[in-house]
Image (cartoon, rainbow, N blue to C red; front, side):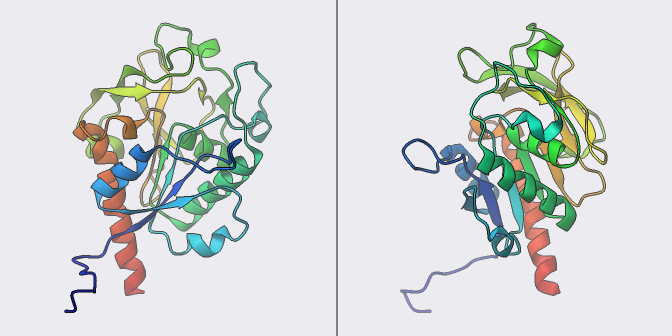
Length: 249
């Protein structure tokens, strides 16, 4: 083999990772923790900024998808109300990610939703959100530290769920960074984890090849917490299986 050629040891799945919307400096950004976690899992991350009108052409080449965290969905998408705590709404990002979420469900694309990503999937499928979670569950458990910082709390996972099989634990500490949460869970989704205050912390779709969404931020601690990294490992494994199936056809 020529020294100028790159050796490819094994096929790696291409995993789309959504980015934040365009900021005031005309930049699309994303925390590097997502990229690192996908790479550790064996996937090749491909950043998906919102607003691409031809996203279907790109979508057909993906083997997996991560719907990342970020600002709030516009309440109009789930019949909600305006609230003073709602922030960073982005019409372009809402439209892109709701479409991606539906396409991932309809096409059986292995998908991991993180925080906002869990909310996007729920809303895309007809579910609703709490505009401000403390209004529903109180302040006994902090889901976000002031002013808008991550904070740790425990999560309890439903036994015999796909999520439990992946993380190998039924209770663990997670980094939480949100003020909204799932209210009415969309048809086809199953709740598989809760916070100590009863807030929904994870959903999955039993009839989908691999779709899991968590309300916490596994990417923040995945570098040193195997429980959190296992989510990205499992996504990459499912994406690789999807890639191999596509090649066979």
